[in-house]
Every structure is written in structure tokens, then in C-alpha cells.
Image (tube, rainbow over all chains, first blue to last red; front, side, top):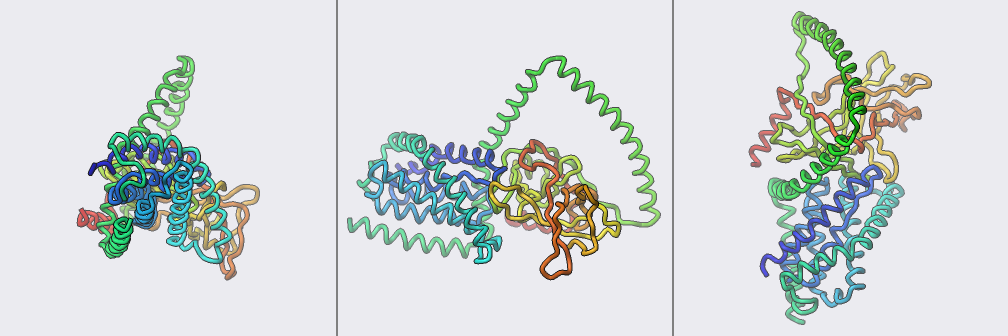
Length: 174
Length: 293
């Protein structure tokens, strides 16, 4: 059980990598395919808290590694989300709830890193808000669409990995 | 349930403590974490890029013998023309060396060319980057210029063991000095990347254009590197100046938009120019990196 977070991470990594490859394809249009937020929700419903925290931190760092995002912003945000989700497992009991949570976490995470980079570059101010908001909206729409498309295949692979390690179903242990 | 609530409270406290430690931690801790996750992903990146190369190889292999014969005939002609040009340039080079010695003029920086395949591209409004399949083990260093033929593509921003990241000309982190074609006084302008609108074309800004500069009518002026600052060799094409030049708010200079010389996201292969003798700044950077390791 102690390495289950690593097994789930290895099962999730191909999807994160596929998202990176899709980002490569959408690069000429300046759109980044982001699913890291959605990827942590289902494991949070079945892993123990500390395992979910380790898993979410690694997912965040994997996204940040090749991007000029302020160090740890996304990883720490996903860790905070993991603590919240593992403390409120009844929120993740059914598939529609999981999908809703995936969308919310993914959109919140993308808003956070997008704003953090804009702030670092000095592009987030009242004067630039007219330029910034449409960009953010476009990223959010793209990210929501990708989450909706990839939610089922991503969940199936994660459920298979969770079943393999015999992780208990949601609402049993925090 | 109470146990769960207590556990959650303890987790939040531990989380905030960790955030505080993370913020206060020295930069090598954060750099080390980032580097570890980059190296974890490197094999997958190499595998996919090599798969792409293999697909291209089989695509080329499926060409007919006639097509290959025609391509090799064209290449032979280009080679003959280039050989002639190389001989002419060799004479000019010798004369250049002799004159520099006579004038005791400092020799320009010499570069070693490392050809690198593009592994992946990444872009948002805030960055435009490509990842190359050459890294520290191949001799690539941070700050090295990246070119395609005689065109500037960008500058190496981060170097890992077998990969490196390149900030493209249009990336907001990119800066360099340039000359404008048609400005006979050779005054320097500043090129810097611009945050781009998604779905729009990525561009860069050209600032400090002299008020009396007038671009040639009917054609876009080329923007070329100055060779100052010790990063890019002189005379490389960065792009072209768009026709709509405007006066700045202060009214003392003009500024315009730079159209990159190539579609930067369609590149498959580029050249990294590594200075044979590192500049003082680079030596300092390397020393810092060695200290970190």
C-alpha cells in the first residue's frame, strides 16, 4: 500500500505526457493542453491523504518542470486541493460528482498558474485586464473541453491501477 | 468523522508549514526539484521524438528511385555552387585575419555548431519555447544562440543533461540588439518578445527606432543582429519590420512589430552556436552551476 501513490502516478503519467504532446500540436495557436488538475481527483477519492498529497505534488511538479511557472505554484495548489478532497470524500462518491470536481479543480489550477505567470511578467494589472481575460477564457475553454473528452479514459486507467493495488472505495478511510 | 476532521486540520497546518519552508528554501532546492522532474520526463520525450524521426525515415524511404535521383542531382548542383562560394570566402577570411592583425582589432567570437532536432514545442500567451534533443552532455550552454541557416530562432534558456529549452524570438523573455536594413547610419534598435494573443500570430517588438528612419517603400526591411552583447554573431536575420511603425508616447522614438523570419513552430532541426571561448558571464554561470551540483 505504501507505494500505491507511485503506481497511480505511473498509470497517470502517459495521460499527462499525451497532454504535453497535444500541447506540441496546438503550440502554433498558443494553447496549452492542461489536465493535471483533473488527473488528481479520482485518486484522491481512494488513496489515503498522505498518498494523495504525494501524488498530487508530483503531478504538479511534472507540469511545472518544463515551463517557466514560478517554482511550486501548481504543485502546492494541487496539494491543497488533494487535502481538501481527501477530507471530503463524500463529495466524490459518484461519477457525475467526480466529473464536476475534475472540472472545478482543473479550471482553478489553470487560472492559478496562468495568473501567476502573467503576474511574474508584469502583465497582470487593471490596464492589461482587457488583454488578459480573453486569453485566460480561451485557456479555460480549451482545458474544460479536454477534461470532458479525457475524463472517462483517464478515469478507467486510474480505476484499473487503484483496483490493482486494492485501494478501498471512497468514503471508507480518510 | 471527528478523527477525519482532526486529520484534515493537521494536514492544513502541515501544508502551510511546508509552504513557508518552500518559500524560504534556498534556490538550489527548488532548482534540484525541477531538474529531477525534467530528467524523469526526458526518456519519454526522446522516445517520441525518435519515433517521429523513424516515421520520417520510412516516409522518405518510400520515395521512388527517380525522385531520389532528381534530388541527388539537384544537391550535386547546389554543392558545386557552394564549393565555389567557400573558396571565395576563404580568400576574404584570410584577408580579414591579416587586416585585423594589422589593426590589432579584437577577434570576433568563434562558434561551434551543434545540430539539434526539435523534440517538442510549447506555447501560451506568456512563453514560446521549443525543447531540443541536445543538452549539457553535448556541450550546449545556457545563453547560446539558436539559428536556422542565417536566421535567428532564439536563445537557449535552460540546459538539462540531454535536452535544452530555447526561448524563441517572440517569447517575452527574449531580448537582443539589432540594425535595421536601410539605416545607413547603423543605429541600434532593441528587439524584445511580446506576450501574444492565443490564436494570433506571435510577434516581437522593435523599440528605439530613430525618428528619422524611413523604411524602404514597397518592401519590408530586414532586421539583423549587431554582434554586440556577445550572444549572437553579427549579420543574422531576426525577421522583418512590419510597415506600421508608430511614434512612442514620449515622442522621441518610433516602435514597430517584428515578423519572425520563419514559422518558428514548424521547425524540425536547428543549430545551436556554442562559443568556443566562453564569455566572462558564462564562466560565472557555469561556476554557479558547479557549486550547485
